[in-house]
Length: 280
Image 1 (cartoon, rainbow, N blue to C red):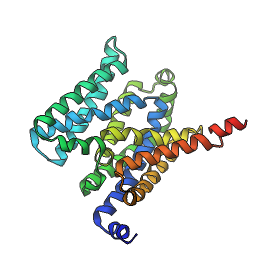
Image 2: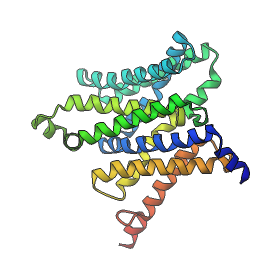
Image 3: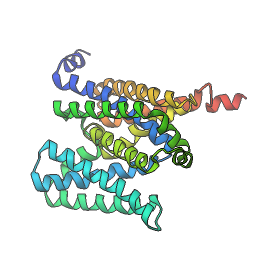
């Protein structure tokens, strides 16, 4: 116990704890967009498409944190928005276009990293390493999260109309195409800000589980946004305190904790839990 308390006094531990709270809330808040759009698998493929941007940034500029961040954002936007554009201008549906672009981009990124001799770093980018987050990483996560929460709050009413009925939104004069591209851009920015904490593979759980849990508890969209943020933040902080004494990977522990919370709510939710339905 004393070792754990001494660890918490270290700057790296405090920075990681703040990162859990900030990144968990931002992802949990934005996860309502993913759940309401029913686009969880699409977001999962986009998160893996960040790797080629990282690889190209290292190839061109070396290990510069800013260039790696920008490279990941550009790669995510190119795959996410590119697949949306291809599906709107061709015969392929969005899922097909996204699958082709994301697998091709991931393969290219892996080839580049192998040629650069960086196979060992791949694990950090795929599964995260929250203990290696710098003050700059934390500030980027905070600014990105604040931007996401502020944007969604300001555009809440037209955004909600678009999410539930895009055709009605267009008829009311809401720019549906702009909202579609904007939502993807916002999600990609939050994904990139979480990359250092939970990695490209695990970030899907952080981006889906909080709002999915709230969906079992409420029908109100506003509760899904703010409740998802609280679940994401509290679950991530709890995982941080569990990971050290258990010796588990912090990023993986966050996803396990959020998954357990979802399963518990799925079983015991007073609104739509499995046991509640069985009793009825």
